[in-house]
Length: 162
Image 1 (tube, helix red, strand yellow):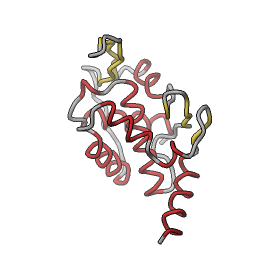
Image 2: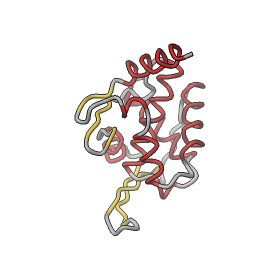
Image 3: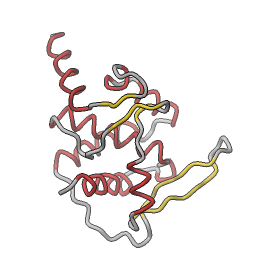
Image 4: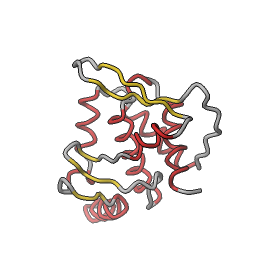
């Protein structure tokens, strides 16, 4: 399975399971995939999505998720006005979605863990949580985030501190 289909299955699975679909803005969904990748790296030593993460002025961010949603007919992007009055893009499954989502057991477990951990957080709490994680704290802005390398570093730090 290629990384594009891995990403598609991850995004679809999150969209199917997330309890508050109206909260799944491009920003939140992209960062959820980042968190899933981080958890997957800690558990399995590799990323689930295949995304090459980048730390821009908005934290961990890439265009991969929104591009997938815009160009794959199984997804839809709705522009809505948020509470602050600004426009945000909400990503959802299209009405015609009929694909079977294929995730291995580890990926499914990581997605469920991250959804359970973050779904009830406000957007600000969610962002604060993302920004508090080891790969974000230890990477300079405007640089690539090598989650596999960061997971190895983090695990070594944890083991060395015992």
